Amino acid sequence: MASKPHHDADKDAISEIQDGIVLKPRGFNIVWGNDSRYWRVPPQSSRPIDSDEFAELVQVSWLELTGSVQLKPSTTYQITFKLSFKEDAFGWNGSPVFLMAKVGKKGKYKWKRLNELEMQLPKEPTDIPANDDPFVVDVPGNQPDTMLFFGLYEVWGGKWKGGLRVHGAIVKQLVK
Image 1 (cartoon, one colour):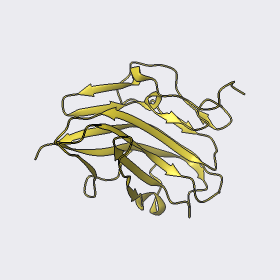
Image 2 (cartoon, one colour):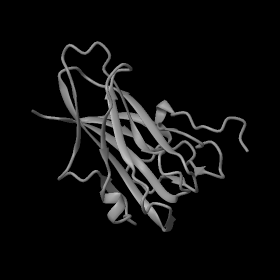
Image 3 (cartoon, helix red, strand yellow):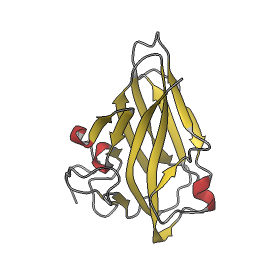
Image 4 (spheres, helix red, strand yellow):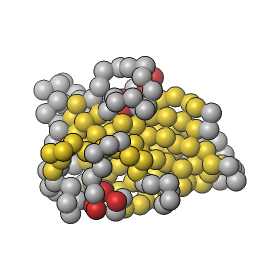
C-alpha cells in the first residue's frame, strides 16, 4: 500500500484551452486514488484528453473525485466529464452518482444526479452530462473568490463499485 492513500491533483494535468479548461485524469484529487487496490491512475503524460488515457476505478465504496480551477468573474461555464465503463463494471445499479460544484470556498453547492449512469453505463468515452442537459455554473461579477470546486460523488449507497474510467473533464466557458 502507498504511504499516502489519496491522489492529489497534478497541476501539470490541468490546462487552458481556447474556451475553457481541461483536466486530464491526473488533474483530479481522488480519494483512495494512490492505492492500486482501489484506483489505477496513469503516469504523468502529455497526451490530449481525447487519447485513451484514463484513471480506472478498481473498487471503492466511496467515490469522490474532485477538481478545482480558477474561473473568470461575470462568466458562465459548463462542466462535462468524459467517462466510460469496463464490460465487467459492477455496483452501479442503485448507486446514485452526483456531479456537484460550487464557486468559492464559501459558495453553495449546486448538484445534479447523473441519471444517465443509472440507465446505461457507456462502454465508449462519453460526455456526462450530455450536451442536451448541461450542468452550468455562473460566476457572479461581484464574486471575490472565483475558484470552482467540483466533482463526482457516490458516497451514500455504501455498495462496492468498480469499472469506471475517468478520461477527464472540461470546464467550458459559454458565450452569452
